[in-house]
Image 1: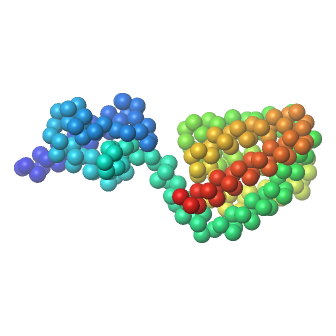
Image 2: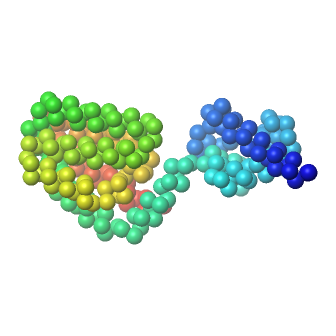
Image 3: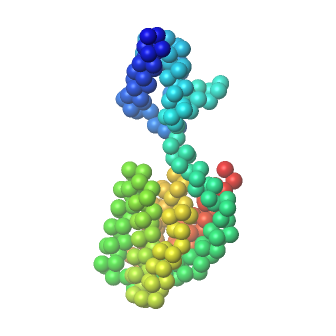
Length: 231
């Protein structure tokens, strides 16, 4: 019976720790309570706490850094690794795609600043607002979709069907989701700011400003993607 009681105790400790993480507002990357602190808070033996922590580490809930303590696992970093691995085997494709984007999209932004009507601007702003909402909920899939829609809608605002069709084709045919810099958590806030800068230039009918804002946006995204290849 002892092994059965021990398993039940471990399970109850694990549940208690999971509730504690939520109740005490621990975020990914935060340092968690030490084994001694958990022993006192839960009023159980240190060996039981240690076993529960080991199980939580195996299941990806916490990370034990020897000599430093227990930390809440950063799930974004875990999700980022497959993206980094993909980058390391597709460097040439990535730079080729961005070279094409840098030729076409800055001019599309400039023409949008010249020709976009109020309906176009309203729709582009709606896409940005939706993007920001998904960012708050850390919904990477929808952020990528709305980032793609932002670029498509901007091209549509040029009133040039050929240019619009070209950008539409690029975002549909290329592995857009796979290479999106939005897989990099710290890139999200930058994207929000850069999108807003592009919209501001378009609303102000600032062709040169819109073109430069798009160049800045694309070059920053490429820089952040390539910098993560060495992680």
